[in-house]
Image 1 (cartoon, protein in one colour):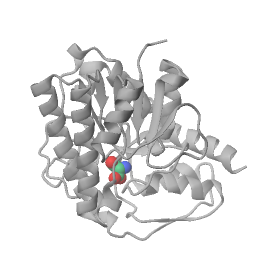
Image 2 (tube, protein in one colour; image 1 turned 180 degrees about the vertical axis):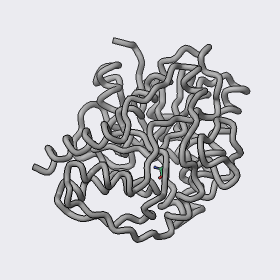
Image 3 (tube, rainbow, N blue to C red; image 1 turned 135 degrees about the horizontal axis):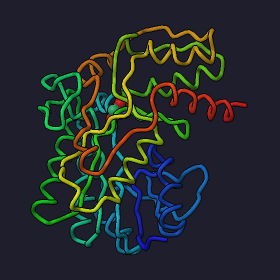
Length: 314
Ligand code: AKB
């Protein structure tokens, strides 16, 4: 077993919930410290109540546990951030800067802070968006992710901090619900379908967006974090692709299991956010640098989601 002490901030969130067991398998139950603003429904391993906007609180946890790696997964996502932009900016930036600074001061060996396809905006090519496309995000979430990418690069260049990042597409999972994102429809739709309900989609039927299945997102995260430093050429954030589909294509995939399933389309303010994002992502730099390759396409992801959620709702 590898000798590290890992701190996961935002451990109760969509990615944290699924990542924790993987880290516990690799590093041992007691070497993975889950941290969040609220206690989870069930605790499995060490847990810290932590408000990461407070540098002293973060420092105390890092020192007490002698943390060697931090995964910082807490953030206000794209749609929710638009309801209170300054609150979202302050929360996303304060937590990210606290993580970088505490990691630097306390000699944390590796840090993971994800970015998002929300970093791209209207002036990036919509198809096969390249690694170094122009970044003019349309949301406060996207602006905070671009700023965090640049701060991460700065901490790496100036202090040698080993900080790594992925630009996650919309992440689809059965383990827990996302909250406040523009890609969240692609999770909610499965919960309605397996319960025999119809679905009202807040995006138009032809809105193509990059997505990734949780299994692939976790594997990408762990592969990036395991890669030797010499293979990491990007210290802002790596483009990452899984699959891309529209709500109509996802509905058709679900209808192969539930032929009577119906989606109705009622686009709201999230349509403009989705329209500002890439439709497909070029992740060739991640493929070249550390061998990234997704395993789940739309058909395989749909099968896995329906199998797992059917068991949950039985
Ligand atoms: C969102 O929709 O805001 C997130 C993201 C793409 O980062 N899922």
